[in-house]
Figure (spheres, rainbow, N blue to C red):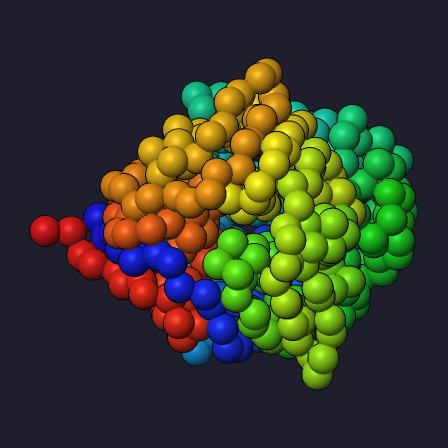
Length: 418
């Protein structure tokens, strides 16, 4: 396995451009199966998860290729209804294929998904929604099997605003008979992006970005070309990287309107954000202040940025409290941050962070995707050398992160396993 080695203590400066959103691209790739013919998704990030989803799609019979930031799909061979364990176990988002399988083929057999080890992430909301649309769903031998001669529009109330369930049910309802309503729907920008993509293919989706989405089913959809939105989590990670090193950078393609409460929390920390020519400029705080956060569904503070924020608070004078309400095991990075000298204690689903003057480099190990990013940020601020292992997690969600940081002046390199 590769490792990342960082010599910390340098302020970041210059410009960096964020890639297309992983969390938006994955459902778009799968939604392309709903359209007859060819689709092209531009701005697709070259990530392990994106390539894995391409493999899943090819097992279903469609042609799929990722090259030079463009994901191309030809759905004419889409005829197989099974997504196997060997692929699905590596990535939770593989469950997204259920919606298009049911909508176009009337049958789906998908292995129960895997992904980061950050707690139980049941798919009961997906399955209850499919049943409301008229599908028969059973669990057999580690697989979800669903059948439906024709899905029919329904009114579905989600127990909580799940991004995955909202995406899956939107796709299934797009080709259902009649009109569907998703209440308590997720409101993330990635949801709006999927709705815009479905509409570009000829769908009739309204209300995306609110807690009630209306989907009027159509008889067929056609392939199209579409540009995926930029990655708001990557953008926010770079903003935190600037803050933790005391640097000033421009983040191209970052969208302030996609940051939600993150922008407010950065301002409370003391950072200055300004929009200019399709970029966000960040000026570090002269007197940084500790800021409490509580992870919440969008537009609240995202759970995918909780670990990075903890790294920033670890070197911010004063005491902050970070409360995780989304996933129960998302504090696995705490023990590794403490190896670097952070003062963090866990109290239930909250972490109390007492800022220290300086972190010091040490060997650490990543436990999941966002924990990896947090360790990178901490290493940038630490004195001396930090060696981060198990960075395959990082490759699932950040495209060439070490190269982008190097262009900002960080002393960082990737090395292969001996």
